[in-house]
Image (cartoon, rainbow, N blue to C red; front, side, top):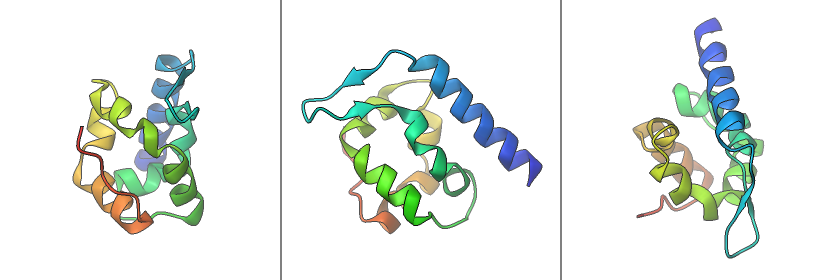
Length: 96
């Protein structure tokens, strides 16, 4: 459990450093991967996503291709757990 927490903390810290400058999509959504912190357990383990995770994922949906194309984030958002979380939350996994 400590390892999962440490990994989640590292993911969030890395995302904060990489995305300290905000970027915006055409839908005026602020792309901020730290918004997906409630999903960290579901992305790194078989834990199902929480309702908070799903709502954050839906809000960040326009940004998912940006995250997938980012080499630092790709390993977290382009894996079987991420696809499972998206499916469980009813968010179509993007084809970028």
